[in-house]
Image 1: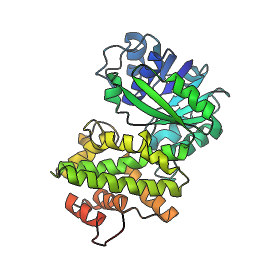
Image 2 (image 1 turned 60 degrees about the horizontal axis):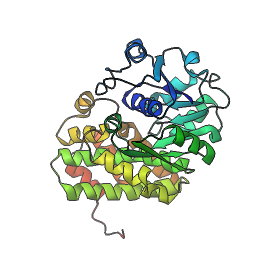
Image 3 (image 1 turned 90 degrees about the vertical axis):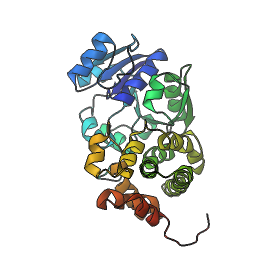
Image 4 (image 1 turned 120 degrees about the vertical axis):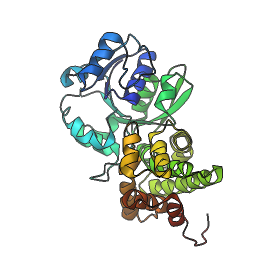
Length: 331
């Protein structure tokens, strides 16, 4: 298939490589001419993916928007979530009418509280049936090293989900399918808030018990919120839920975990932002989760506690005190 990836960051380039390894012709689109030249002429992306010496011959790159998508059977969106709407509106009317649009993004749009499936479909004016989301325990550096990994492709059209899954399945990357787009989107975005909290606890010196406590209570929180939004509870127990949560909360390769760890070590918000390599989507997502909790009438104690961390700079211990206020509850 002809597949275009919009955004040549670490995960976009890695996923492009997966698609090429699966036998597809892949065109990367990027704004930075340096990145385009590197991928097209030298088959590498040292700026965004320095650990991979050579990308497959089936990958190329362009900076022209119309050229990038004109022949695409699948268009993959790998842009920072908070900038997605503005960036995608430039492609409105250019996407072929039969192309499937796939999102790799994880986040809630801060200004609207909308999920990425809603943002993409609105910005590109494509029907929900032609949209698919990909999410799972997919740390880009490990996938780039071709370590065995799995993901979930969700679309309201199970046939389109299967098409995308087939296009990204290789000997080292396995794709499962689902029709629970809402669940997949909620898992992928809300777990970043949990990763911030776990990272903060680790950075502050707390051990396994504390991390497990935060992860499990965070999972319960995001599951309740997801179900209130219309998601299927079982999605949160699978690769896109528990799987992604384990990977994101247990590895320094996770931007959100690293950002939280730096906060736990005593860095200010600005210092942690400067030290982080890339965007920690959990930061803007925190306020969005609190707002979603209010909209659906679901308590969000972890997100509320992390909001105090981000807004007021409270300590890890104070965050934990807010998370567990002393009241005895049923689990």
